[in-house]
Length: 398
Image 1 (spheres, rainbow, N blue to C red):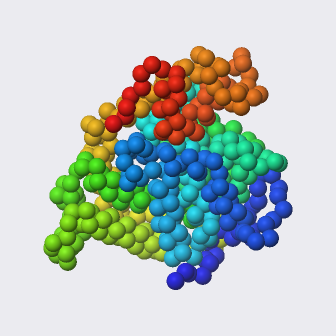
Image 2 (tube, rainbow, N blue to C red):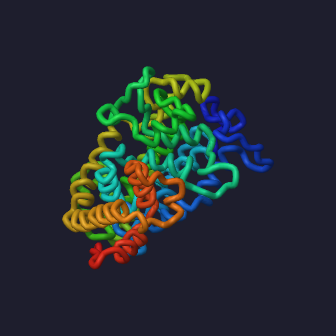
Image 3 (cartoon, rainbow, N blue to C red):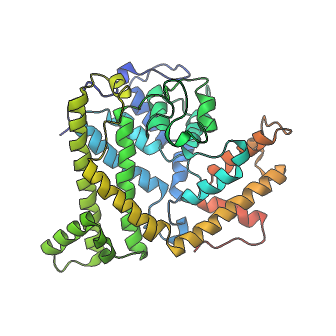
């Protein structure tokens, strides 16, 4: 049963609005409208052929960015419903969070960041903002999706503040500064980078962690990168596996793995809900703005569960992301993007004409950023097709 709307939830009737003013919808709240725009965007459809760990043609059962986003949305909505938050805004932020990812998962991000090192680098969060603020061309009166302030805030700040009150970068931004796409945008539309984002954004962010942990275990088991017995090195997964074996002693491994994933998701959702209730009871926020002005996030794992979750991430890093097979394929994938970037930078006419409209031919930075935007929007299979078109030899990525 859904909890009644909490006072600290974002209220669509009190939204701060959109950068370009629009008449209100007669049938949808501003946040529902945001969510629908994300779902109908070109960038969202492309997530079907963008993968996280496995390249798209390795199998139909592995997660893609699209299926991952849907799973994040399901977990996020479940938490939002329990906490009395706005489910439409929560769903928007869950579905939009991966729109800025390039092809080939984190390998693609590393490659583009290196290619753009002299032009501000590449950050998938900033790229998501570019997509929804400029790169989608679907509406007659504005570029992008013209999302509400609350959705844009959640995109940029779902992992916490980017600056302190004085504007100095904090955390992981301290060394290299605020990503170019975000720094440029806030000159026009202040997203208050010094504050925390809404609870809806915090829920979407932790739902992303839960989905990653559970479903990368599922994909890793399916791919044979590790086995159920290997997961017994962690107390949490060992306990779930033992309980499943006690209840279903003759269950085959495929179903035992599925039960592990299901129970793990339930355990993590329950832990986050309980911790959020405790944090909210202590902080007593009376509005969404009260949430933003807290000194820490109010949606988090309890300390003990945070250790369990960190152990899962460490296991996956060692046994999946750094697996020899995955490393080899991702190394080849990185080279594909290096090749494409260099070719486009050298041969201007290889880019589609629409990507050159308004370009400053004498500005290498402008060209490099346009190329970066073009490559970031590619699916895995389109990147492979482009490489095959432009080069004599293309890795098979298997």
